[in-house]
Image 1 (cartoon, one colour):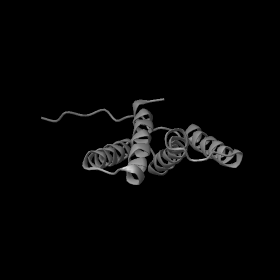
Image 2 (cartoon, helix red, strand yellow; image 1 turned 120 degrees about the vertical axis):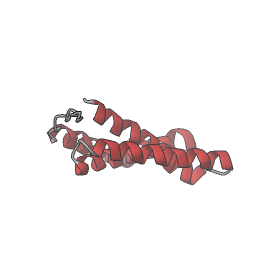
Image 3 (cartoon, one colour; image 1 turned 180 degrees about the vertical axis):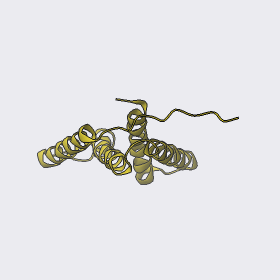
Image 4 (spheres, rainbow, N blue to C red; image 1 turned 60 degrees about the horizontal axis):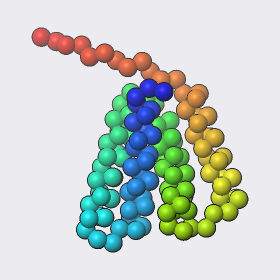
Length: 115
């Protein structure tokens, strides 16, 4: 996995943070953290999209963010978890991983210095 895909995964983690922040932020510090997470999340996704296929990056970003948000709500905020929800998250992650596996990465372009 190259560094652009790692950037997508990190961006998805920040997506989980800001989505949860939108629901649970209740003071200025929490709202500031939510806004910072939004900026980092989208910056990373946009940056990765400059070298990876945009559609695949977006699908992986949203899929990981969705699964992460559901799991964080269950683990940290007491949302109920049932077998159907778990099975659907598994299907989503299988689709995201499969999409990533069949997508060919473009080789990263080397910068050419001009004088």
